Image 1 (tube, one colour):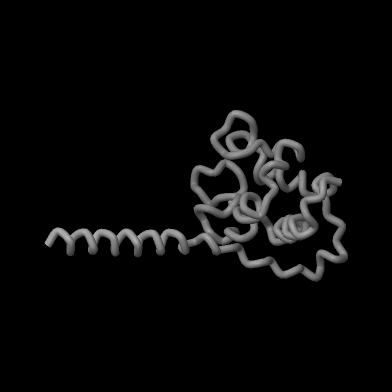
Image 2 (cartoon, rainbow, N blue to C red):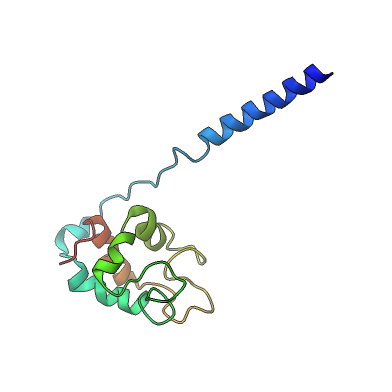
Amino acid sequence: MRNRLFMLIISLLSITLLLTETACTTDQLEEMPPLAFCDTLAVSYDLQVKAIIDTNCAFSGCHVSGTAAPGNYTSYSRMAPFLTDREFRRFVIDLRNDPDLGMPPNWVTNPGPQDLTDEEFDIISCWVQAGYPEN
């Protein structure tokens, strides 16, 4: 009886280990297909993106110093650590239609815009595709 219980525990631990080793470790975001119109659009933080960020992200109660939102988006240098596919691209582009996780959020308590306009989204998408140029 004791031997059977021991074998059952070992089997369950082995299965658990196998599942945790393979779960989500190879998941990656799908590569965003290049947007054709981005080839003709010169996009940079200084030219277009800062105004979009200031209006939709970096305002009182959101991505500014002293708030709970991660990151201070009031300047390119302060925003730069968050300009990764895992952070900025994921929440602004990949999760755009998710009302809870997509940024800007569609929360009732959100004091700013709850969605980017199509034009703003296109500019941000081209900026991400170009590798987040500053100027």
